[in-house]
Length: 252
Image 1 (cartoon, one colour):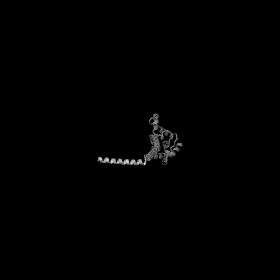
Image 2: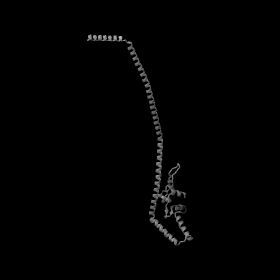
Image 3: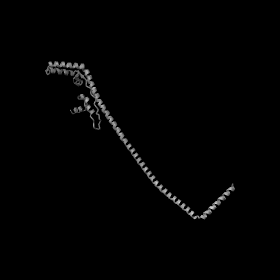
Image 4: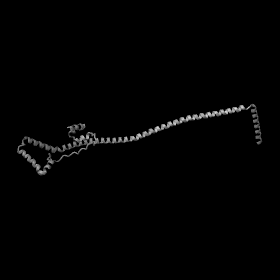
């Protein structure tokens, strides 16, 4: 009873008409498994019906009686059992027997007449049902296969994250190194500017001292020269120029 209820709950809306005839294989295909076992349990192959004699008696019945009664044993058993029922009046032939024989004749005629068409229709329904179940099974297999491939892809991406993190760490380290070198260059530039300023200041001081010393020496020399000495120097310069001009003319 529980299996039937579970089967009805799992059967889709379009397959409810086939719910009474579905086997437990459908339940195994539809329900999910939450264990490490196989997700889709294999379905056993469908067994074909055995052979029949006279349309209603299974062949296995004759095969079971052959070793004990021989080939004619089943027929003699049926005939003897019928005669026993009639002789002991365990079964009385009346109008219902005639009706039953007529009804049985009609059934046999209907089976012979319409049996192949009904069998073909039933086979078609059976094939459609198997096709639907196979489609459900293949769809589930495809979905689980896609899920497995997606999981493998995600695992591969997760492995690639390690290389990505290493690259990011290297990039951060390079940025930090670049910032460190840039700051070191800034410190070097600022210190050099201050040192250059002190050197230029010292050079300026030395140049000003030299200029002051030169001015002081010139002023001292100028102050030490008297007007008479200046006149004599000028007269001597004039005489030197005249002598130089005469020597130049003589040379020409």
